[in-house]
Length: 297
Length: 251
Image 1 (cartoon, each protein chain N blue to C red):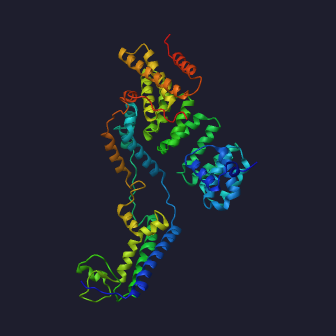
Image 2 (cartoon, rainbow over the protein chains, first blue to last red):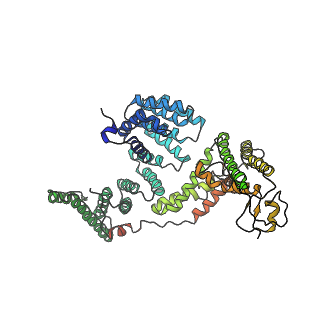
Image 3 (cartoon, each protein chain N blue to C red):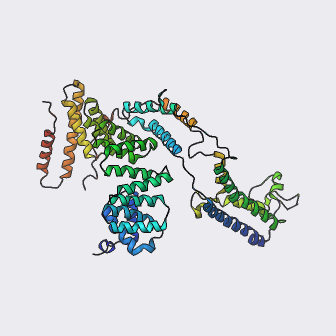
């Protein structure tokens, strides 16, 4: 069992910088974090200085993900010793209780934090995650709505709510949440694409048109979003195949669908460049696109 | 223009020590302020209000990316004459009287203690210890009206107003060392006196002005005049005028 620094030939500074990068960009590669972080804590604790506390927090959350209760417990002990009255550490203790499925105790802990500091958003969000973990999605939705009434700007919460609504098949409300996200992040192509997918799922001519427009917007923001490209093709051909549309709309949509088809074939050709099976795969793409055509029966 | 040659020991024993003293006192003030500093309790209502105002502002700026109906729905939520948020919600505003409000009183006292008191003490001591001689010369000409202010202790009628005493050198230092403090103590340090004076002038501009009602009213007006121009009107035409750029997708 050789250590990370031997396996990858990295120094402790590089490991620390890697951990910082993962922390700032919100990665969730918990196993890697546990491996790298554990080694940093055990071997190089003295060299890290004050960085070590935030590394403890990061490693503890990753350890909870990987079921490493021993590591999580030791990190929590160190943090408790250094910051005995901290709400942040209390929240971590609560997360550990959640991981052990002791939801009642975790709830009591979060309630005590909220009594002390009613504006603590972290504790409220953990309580909602407990409800979600227990499968009580309607209650979770209700609590999350109340939370959002007070903290309208919390984007993480809007995204979580949209996910909950999609699970409940309440697409209109999910669309509302995604609109909030699109409003605050107009250049994020993923929110546009998710919104378009929800609109497409809702169905109906108006929604399909909206879906097509937002798929196009997602493509404009990021030319390489294949999912949006397929979505554009599907929504355009769906509208074109609908009997209720005027001739002009039909013509336009057929044009859009044809353009999308050509781009898809181009993409697959580029992917297969230099490979022997290119010709067969290109033909397979064409057949796939044919079979995806919506036919009104 | 009187050319005076000053003894170089003035430089060694007056100018440099004053710089030193000012700097050390500034750093000490910063740490003492940190010790005496207590966490400001944030009001839930204020946080909520400030976020609502932020949302309304974002709606005004980025509403053009939303479908027309969604934008109208949100505008209606805020501005509807009967049920709109900005029309319906009136916050009770308690004017914060600095004399009776205890928390603000203690804050003010602490501010006075850590900033004004040392300045007075050190200024007075320097005036007593380093008086009666010319310390330095400011590089720009000054009028005679500055003489009594800058030349405390030097009773010479014919002396140029540019030659100043050590007390004025001390005050020059207090303001001049600001950037040094930023370098050493990092941004947002408590040794920065001029910033404190600026704060007193602009008032509480950050955490919700003491009158949220006024903020609501101005936001209502701003939202009323906003029109919805859908940015996605011609998005397909714009997209399809050229091939997609797949660079970097396949590596």
